[in-house]
Image (cartoon, rainbow, N blue to C red; front, side):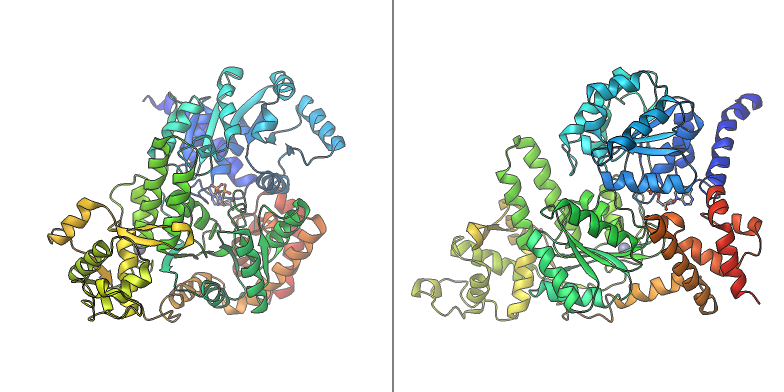
Length: 619
Ligand code: ADP
Ligand code: ZN
């Protein structure tokens, strides 16, 4: 490329970097941000797949500010919109949202600003945008670009399918000259294809970032009864942190939240069955708190980007690996270490598979979804690095182990259990799928109380005395995860039978080995949760004990400021910025402006207050 041309191509990116620094207070672009922004600035549509926390919003916010006209952002959730708009306003950007919650007077004012060309960014819901009168009004407004956030919602292969997203394909015809950018955090190859087809982006470039989230420390453990008690243990071992606990049912969230409150944890329940007002109230409480635990169904989450969530616990497992990564991805968005802990069981898997089988959808869709469920449990119950497994699932190649998940740090050891597996499989075969798991184990141990003479006469009766009840339970559970046994839900009294015939045959022939996890020594906090806790303290060590009082003073000031403005504290400054301020103790506006997260608008608004607090601690 001739030098002059190369320069012309780079000039817009230099301007973009300038905005990144002045408006948003960040020094450099991260990952693929610069490339995506460059594409949109060149007037081309694109699709960007960036992991949660990867900085997707700047990919459309910056081009919207640079190109003439109004930037439209389509977003599925009001919570997400209101948060982003609040953050943009703090940074001095003219942004607004139009949704069903906005008062008529405010709506009218927003339209006035749109028509006067005063507004830079407008957030809308898909159904709001696609109303004929809205489209008509917008057709008279110059648009800089259209961003479609959470674009995987358009795909029925994804896990968040929203039918109203399908309408967005029309935008291609309605605004043929406006670049469109589809962004999402989760999309396997198939979902990506679907997004491109539905949103008519077939000819556009696709940017797919690495799915690595090095700040996330993953672990998973099988449920062992007393699930709520275990969650309380996990949460109380992480005091004064914000976290999210996902539970499978509405009732489950209420019960768990209560159990946590009984243990002294400030926990709130959240689910779709709550009154809207209560939901908003609790969401705000959670967002504004320095440390609170939200116990929620998956109705809670999309668009909740509280940056300082230090853990996500799945009290019940997620629906797929996509959902796993997205839900766990809500932890550690500020880039500091955070944990994702998942509790799971074979019963959860059977239940998920059954729900799919009962769905009123195409057989092919059922197959895809069932496979996704199996892949999830293979990952949860697997023995190799969890982070690497997720990344491979998303199509990354040459992935290395993370070195910090429970499997990398060696919490799980395996032994060969092929012979025991053969015994369990033949017992299940002989019993003809008429009994549940407990009965199968008792049979292997020869201790079923009311065993018939016929059962006692079977060759498998009592052949498994080398293992304990707990070990047999573990093994049968594993055989279920591997598909070697299958459980028929039978209305809550599940029956165990033989699974995949080919695989079972391979085990009998010794061609397929079964590696069993060494018996877990119960729940041992010194190994599992102890390590991550220490790590996150190390990461916070950027804050020296001597700076702690200043940090606390800044936090208290931020808290007051946030209350007064009715915004979450982190839209003012996030923890990381406060840590930087406490460490650097800037003595001038110029020194403060150099810190990450301090853009021009924030400097103008808060510079004085911050410098005064810092001054009070100087010398
Ligand atoms: P997501 O991709 O999940 O939507 P966001 O756009 O919300 O992520 O960004 C996550 C966090 O990362 C935000 O706090 C944002 O300010 C920060 N961030 C984004 N881009 C950069 C950057 N280039 N440098 C530093 N921080 C950034
Ligand atoms: Zn690992």
